[in-house]
Image 1 (cartoon, helix red, strand yellow):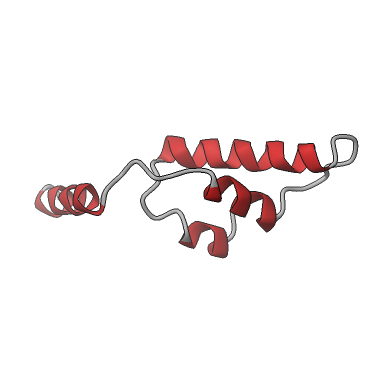
Image 2: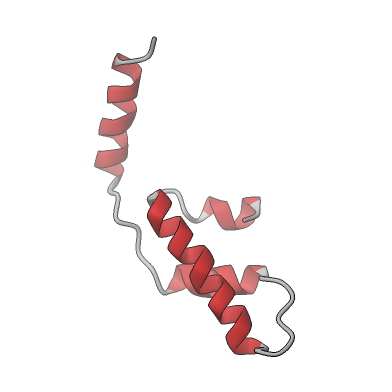
Length: 72
């Protein structure tokens, strides 16, 4: 995943990111089932447009605060 694609996935969990990658790969295959050699940015964009992140900004703030309190 490139920097441009990653910028739009801030509130996605790791499992959701894996799902986005899988969906992007399927989009590439649907486009050219016999010769899909790569997943392009447009495939990631389509996958992201069809998904919504599970995490809220509040949850991310809570995780960051917890991490700050428990760093060694």
